[in-house]
Image 1 (cartoon, rainbow, N blue to C red):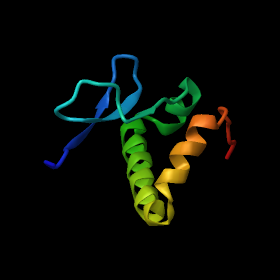
Image 2: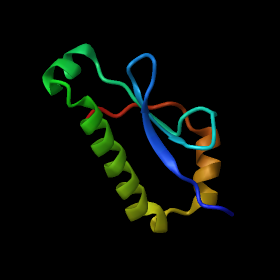
Image 3: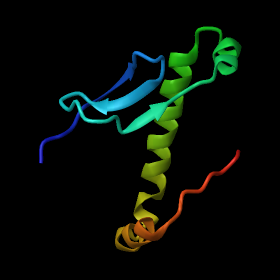
Image 4: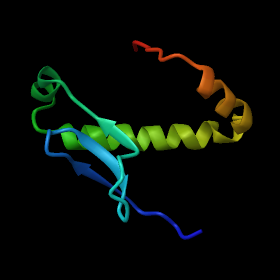
Length: 86
């Protein structure tokens, strides 16, 4: 399997996305900021999006070895959407 390269792009609607460079499919990650959040960041929204994506990748790397992927796939099929407020 050849290595994949990724890029962070700003979409036409202002959202940020992580996608494979060689693939036009839906992005792997999409980050959307509210108008209020954009104002608070004062034009640093791209830097914040990069930091959020980097933190997510690091978190996946830290927990990936603890996941039983076969059980997760079964649970994902039966799971209902849920939301967590942080």
